[in-house]
Amino acid sequence: MSELADTDPTQVRVELGARSYDILIGSRLLDSLGAEIVARYGKVRAGIVSDSTVAPLYRARIEASLTQAGIAPVFFEIAAGESSKCLSVFETLVEDVVGARLERGDVLIALGGGVVGDLTGYVAASVRRGIGFVQVPTSLLAQVDSSVGGKTGINSSHGKNLIGAFYQPGLVLADTDTLSTLSPRELRAGYAEVAKYGLIDDPDFFVWLEQNHTAMLTQGDVSARIHAIARSCRAKARIVSEDEQEHGKRALLNLGHTFGHALEGATGYSDRLVHGEGVAIGMVLAHQFSAYMNLCSPDDGARVKAHLQAVGLPTSVGDIAGDAPDTATLLRFIGQDKKVQRGTLTFILTRGIGEAFVSNDVPSSAVEDFLRQTLEG
Ligand code: NAD
Ligand code: GLY
Image (cartoon, rainbow, N blue to C red; front, side, top):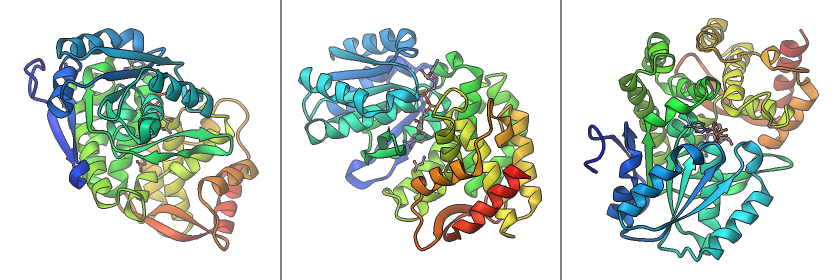
C-alpha cells in the first residue's frame, strides 16, 4: 500500500482468476494512484480520460501522482454528461488514444463518474484489442457500481448500453474525498445503487441504511461512507465473481433497471432524470410490480418508497419534471432493454426486502397491465 494515504485503504478483491483485481477505498487515495499503478503494471505509459467537470478538479493531482511515480501521462477530455456515451465520442477517443501510441502493456485511466468509466473501458477494450484499464471513480454511483465488474460500453439510438464489451479493470481506486465536490443530486442518485444491494440480498444492510443515510449523505461521515461503499463493492464483487458475463445471478444487479432504463430513454437521457434517479423509481416500481404479481407484500414497496423519499430521491413517475412518460413509450423501451421471448420478459422481482430473484417468464401483458394501472390510475 502507498504511504501517502492517511490510513490503509479498505481493500476488496474481485476474484476472477488471472484477471482478479483490487478495489481500494478510502480517503486521500488519489495521490497514491501512480505508486499503485507502478506496483501492478510497472513504469508503463498512461492515458487519462476525464470529463469537463471532473478534470478541473482532479486532473492535476492525478498527473502529479503519476509523474512522481515516473509515468508521463497523456490527457484526453470529453464533455460531461450521458450524451458523451455515444459512437462519435467513442470514435474520437479511440483515434486519439491510438494516435498517442498507447500500447497493449500501457494503461488508460478513467477519472470520473460512470459515463467516463463506461466509455473509457470500452475504448481500452477496443484499442489494439485491449490495453490496460484502471478505474478512478469519482461519483458515488461509480464507486459502488459502475467501476466494478467490467461492464463497459456506450448508448445506441435504440437504447442504453446496447454497444459494449465485458472488460475488467486491473485496479479500481475509489477516493471517498472526491465525493465532497459531487452535487447533492448526484450523490443521492448514487445512493440508489447503494440501497439496491440491501434490496437484492442484504436486508440487514437496508436496515443500516435506513438508520445511517443522513450521516453518510448529508453529514458526509467518512467512516459511514467507507462502510457503505465497501459493503456495496463486496456485494458486487461476490456476484461478478460467480457470474461475470450475466448468464444468471448477475442479472440481480439490474434490480429496478428495466423500469429505470425505460424512464431514462423516455426522458431522452436528459437532465430530467439521471441514471440513479431512474433506478430509484425503478426499484419502487419493481417492488410494487412484485406485489401486483402477489410475490411480496405491498408494505415492502411502501417501505422502499419511504426510505428513498427520506433520502430525497424521486420515487414515482409523477416526480419526474415535465410531461410524464406514457405506458406505450415505456413498453417500447422495455422491449428494447429486455428481449421479449414468446410473450415473456426477464425481470428482477422480489419476495420481500433483500429477497430479489431473476424471473425469466414474466408475461409482457402483466407488465403492460401493471404500468397502465400505475400510470393511468
Ligand atoms: P456521470 O459520469 O455522468 O457523473 C454524474 C455527474 O457528476 C457528471 O456531470 C460528472 O461530471 C459529475 N461528477 C462526477 N464526479 C464528480 C466529482 N467528484 N465532483 C463533481 N462532479 C462530479 O454519471 P454517474 O452517475 O457517475 O454514472 C452513470 C452512468 O454509469 C450511466 O451511463 C450508467 O449507464 C452507467 N452505469 C454503468 C454501470 C456498469 O456496471 N458499467 C453500472 C451502473 C451505471
Ligand atoms: N450494474 C449492473 C451490472 O454491473 O451488472
